[in-house]
Length: 308
Ligand code: AMP
Image (cartoon, rainbow, N blue to C red; front, top):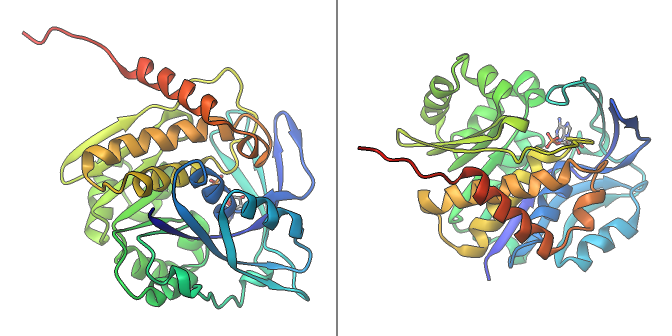
């Protein structure tokens, strides 16, 4: 079984959508990524940090899903990373209201010994300095390193972020962030510019409009499943990334053809994440539901056409 190491925030979120508002609920990039990846046959572990205010029961919930949390440092006297966001009416765009780094501000990650030879490395959203430190602690180059990031780090730590981008195989990024990073409006041109920064594969997430996978002049498009109701998009991007790398790690095949399946797998899981607030839908998701929806994805994208 492949080992998958996930780095990212484990957080409290306060979310406002047109359908409602939450007080602090559990969130964070590594939380969503690991919940998605736990749907696959992989041995996964998280590197992150939380404060003494973080409920131990949630770490236990992750352990119950075979996610190793020994790499989550608990700083008893500190406060957990906190993020608050408000979605616009179309749910495709949001404003960040608050980002409190708290314990993340001085975090020195420590990769547990049993993950220093990880096969797959998912650098989820958090400080690029932390992402780099994790790369440096891995003793053997993983089969695949995937990076996810966001505009916050482009605004605040661009030089460090560019150093990390140069070291990864795949970057997953949303459309607005791809434009910001590359300075190009066209996503095709943006992907070309980002390729030159290092990653051989560029995945651009477009929310309810699906995702694009670019590699070597080839492009693959996966739609998002048209849903009657989207309740809360928070974590959809991370869930996508977790489904993407979880699929690749479990199949142990990093060819472009298999990456296409991985993009569908990520889109499939993300379609569940948005149906409830926070992680609620992901913690109750069954294998049967996942398979049923994959069938819908297949039907949505298959067609026959006479070419002559
Ligand atoms: P997504 O909706 O997939 O972009 O991810 C939302 C998650 O990202 C939330 O659960 C937040 O806790 C987390 N998050 C928000 N801002 C940051 C940031 N600057 N660094 C790391 N994680 C963040």
